[in-house]
Each structure stands twice: as C-alpha cells, then as structure tokens.
Image 1 (cartoon, rainbow, N blue to C red):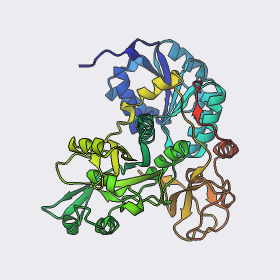
Image 2: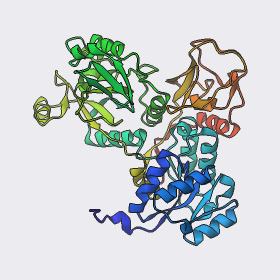
Image 3: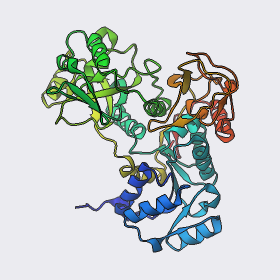
Image 4: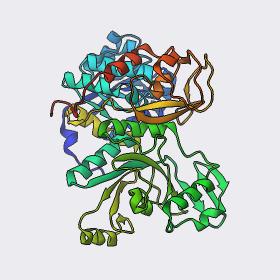
Length: 459
C-alpha cells in the first residue's frame, strides 16, 4: 500500500540523470515509477545500449524512449513526453530541465556536467562524491550566487549523515563523533571460527574471545584488527564520503586515514569516547568509519550512519538505555544511528529539496582528501581511479587540512607524475601533468573562496 503524499500533488519536476546505467542510476529510475511528479527527461550515459536494456528491464516501453545526438532533437523528444537518451553533454537541451542528478562518478565529466547545469539555471543533486571532494566548494558557491541548489544526494551516506547531524544539532545534543560503517559487515561465525566480508571468508577463531570490549578498549580493538587483517576493510570511497561530510561540518578525521575500529553496534558509544574516558578519540568533533562486527542472524548496520553524543541528565539516559538505546557503560556518551542507505530509492527527497531551495550546509575549503604515496613512485607514473572502491594503485587516500599546494585525490585520475614522489609524501599539484583542466580550474577557484555556511536562497 502506497500512501498518498503531498509531494505527489506538486508541479512536475523534469530531471536529467548522468551515469544512468550505473547501479545508483538504476535504483533512482526504478523509484521514479512511484513518484510521478519527478519526470526523468534526459538520461546521459555513453553506454546507450546498456541504458536501453536497463529501461526494458524496468518495464519502460521502447516507444517512450528515443536516442538523440543534438540539443534540438533532445528538446523535441522531451516536449513529446518521451525519455531522451544521450551519450554526452553536447546533446543535452537544458531549457526543459529543472534538476541534474549527477551520478557518473568521474571528476572531469561530472564537474563539467554540474557546472554547465548551473550555468543554465538548473539545480544540481550531486551523487558523485568523487566530484564533490574536488569541486564541491566552487560549485556550491556558484549555485548560491544564482539562487540555485547544490546538494549531496540522499541515499548515499554523506547526505544521510548530514541529515542525522541536522537532527542531532536541532535537538541540542553535544556531538563527539560522526561517521558511518564500512560498506560491508564482518560476520563472525562462532561455530566455524570464520569471518566473512563481502563474500570473502577467512579463519579468525580468536574473535570468539573478543566479542566483548573488556576493560582495555584499545587493546581489544588492536586484537580484533589483527584477527581480521587478511580482509580489506578500508576503502577510498569511505574517505571520499567522509570528506564530503567534513567539508560541510568542519569536523576533520581524528587521524588522516581514520580509525576503522572493528566494533559491535552496542559498543560505539564506548569506543567513540574521549581518550580520558577509555575511548579512542584524541579530540571532539571528528568523522570516522568503523567495521561492523556481527554474528549470523544479527541485523546489519547496512553501511548506515551514526552520531556519538555526550549525554546530559543521567536519569534520562538511564531510561533510554532501558529502552534499548546505545549508551556507554559509564553513561557519559550515547550513539544515535540510522542503519541504512537506500541509494536512489531516497534521492527523490533531494530532488524535492533542490527545487524547494532548502538551505543546507555548504562545502568549505578547509579539509582535503589528498593522496599519499604508498611506495616510491617514479616520474611518468600514470594514475587512474579503478575498481569497485574507486582507488588509485600505489596511493593512499588521506584527509588533511587543505594547503592549496596538495592535489585532491580524485583530481589525480588520468594524470601522470611529472616528477618522482617518495613513499610517504603527499602528491602535490606541481607533481602532476594531465589533470582535467576544467576540474582543476574549479578546484583552484574554490580554494580562494571564503566561509559561507548555507547555500540556497533561504539564508
């Protein structure tokens, strides 16, 4: 049963979607069958055949779809109430579009799509977190100057975490740490002594004796990490998402690669406590990622988001502990969490917010996702983002204070080293050749921006 909602009664919203044939694009398009006020008008993806096949699977009949290679033809298709498929921005007619949902995931083309949309008075919902970490500051400022919206897309962890932070802040709770779980839980089977993550299973019998935190939290976390060291838990995508949040909240990482503790959900308030209270934090107000440890049959954290806060009245939080809320053993901290992120299923929320010009935190040029060499990298090394986790071979993503000489991590995609970079060094802008010129120009413009906490017209 789908309940009626006031959003169904609003004027039609015409949307263009990049990266249409990706997993995110599919989940968004599938959801639009239940939100008829949002009309997918232009789908942008070089894999036209793949998009056509996906639309067929979604039950969209061929007569409602047409390919186009120029803006005039695209405009005619949209005016006819059909869905235009285009391979690149050159064929887009922006006049009939209200919102661009940018989900291609590539900094060069993604930043160009978003910048062009804003130039044509089109709101931008930025799903491509890689793009946002490089050019989000400048694109947000340009949107604000034109009275347009530039928003991270609900359904991915950055926007969801920012919504949670807004709720926590509105309530008036004192935030200690915010973050998310890694994309995939660690599922420990006590009967076999094995742990499985994303289909990969290793022996880790020692976890059976480490299911409780014990008296020394740091030592327990150290032993858990050693037990699952055969699994890849940290990912560039995690650092990317937390950078999107950090630039909008001013909360940095506690350590540049984040802590990644192996943690059970009911332990988060104890783990993300100040060091003097037995936790792992060096200071308040940080972003982090943890690996969710669970047993078979226990609910997943599902790549969800959390906020650890300081409690106030002891009686209040003792009552809440009794209702099943996560409160630290000493009662000083509590963890509030949303165990989900539903990808494009949630993105209609952001499309509505964009058209309504809902005020939102703007990215600020103070925190940078950079690249640190994991080994000596010779001049001429070609750098490319690859794989499911969007990583660069030989380069670690690190969250640092921006210094305007260091290259953003995802600006490195497609570039090559102009000079050698030693192991442990940050890769600087002067160390690379061939970075996307448009994205670089947008990044540099953003570094020159001042502080402005809200975007949109409701400032």
